[in-house]
Length: 447
Image 1: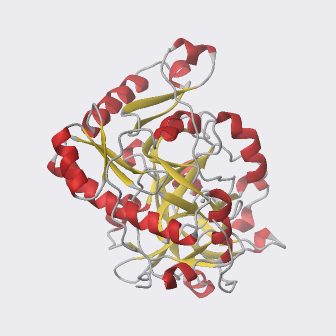
Image 2: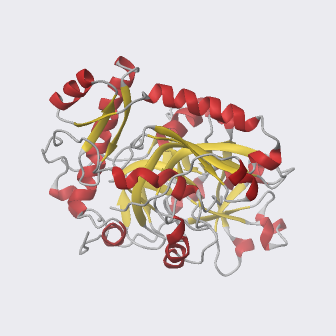
């Protein structure tokens, strides 16, 4: 899925303001990760963290875990004080910040050990305003609504952001857009052995009909495996992107399309490792873009029942749980095209219209990140620390041949941006749809 070039510029804007507000107390300083956990990071991921984030491995894992503590704390405030809670994020120096609308609430937050920021409007009010904005957009004539790329809530600037195409019609709408940029990161030196078995981040191909019936390259879809999962009855699955399922993208395609490990010599002789059991896209699915691949015996025998992901053909990461997106949290994604690339969460919730092959449009809702994502990375795994965070849905760099060129070309537009679908929402919805007690395969992090 390709995103508009303007997306990153619109959702990043206030990132440079992270250190400019009234930031109070420093975050709790206890060590959240063990040295053994740090040593288990593969060399390729360590290199990506160093290149893209300029963090040490310890800082990367520490911030990822701290973001999850902040997420739980924010949930409590969101439920107990919805009229004063105004969002939260990880600052550039790694401190967790909570925005509230009153000094009394700020004092309580500070006493709990978090940095504070006074905001004018609560998160609930911002989300209400965005819902009204989305209703207005859907009522516009198509030639006008097509000039609106996305809407999001910017907790850093405490406002709703609408990203509009830089065109005569877009300019005539006279709506605000934002600009800016931010990156966070380290240095390498470790890693485990390369596992030749397929896993999350590796390539799969699919067709509406059996592969042997494919006569043109256009009939073959290329995506990345996401996280391996398992049902309560032991049924093995892989979670990927919804638009990778031909039933979603190709008019006339039926459910249950086959999924193959590609044979590099002759793709028509590829090994089938499963089929799409379920997929959803758009507003009727809560804005999610996900698919569930039910694995067959060949898929399990190949190794797709392991709690691991990797960036293309390199060393692997063992998944240690699931996580939720937090603005400013460090993230790394795996994918068959761009391997490991890292960045930060730019926005926890962004609405992006996706144009389908039949000319219709579906609204996808996910979190935005600054990772570089290329064509073919769709469906791949997004991690924060070593926890599963989301499934890659789209990017503004999908047409680029590599991330080096994407970064150069998109630099003036704020850099690369991608949309991820939160894994916990995928697991909940897919599990309900399948009638399965679905969970991501993982093992506990070393203590």
